[in-house]
Length: 233
Image (cartoon, rainbow, N blue to C red; front, top):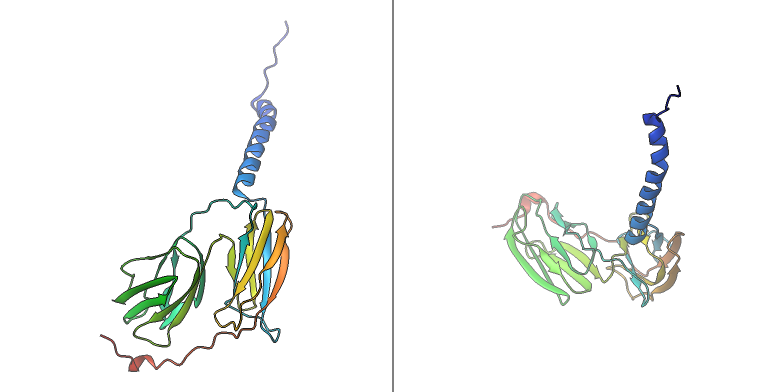
């Protein structure tokens, strides 16, 4: 009498796994393509006129007509007031971003901007700010504190999700940029003249490195009096 050999559980798994793995891989590839994971990275080195690394420079890539940019909802951003300074000193955000200004100091601050791009005022407060500010137009916003004159900060609002700020070594990295043609812009709050944009073409796979030379100076912190001499209401 012949005995029917039933496949073992392991055999079934070996038989099913390739088809399941193939479907899963196809799904992942589709998701990656849709979400732009197959994308390039762009690294920018920013130096001053003397060739020294320039921190706090904003680098952003504006897509040219015909270049597809996936929709990204801007995430909220916080600019803290800490040790009587805006932190970070320079912030770059996408148009449509809401920014909060938490006060981490044991004293009051009064944040304002008179910039045409966004004029606002958050009067004396401590802790979390009473509201966030929506930045709905591109351009440069200068921040100040009505109590502490030396406090200055900057927000660069850009019409693209592709941006970065240079670190202490003058390096800025933008990741996951899809294939297409772009204009690369560089900006710094102390620049003496605007720099012409660089046109680039990205293939969506290979990384690119560029360098910008800006006629600008690193940040010089302004004098602030010792904390025990500060008076506030």
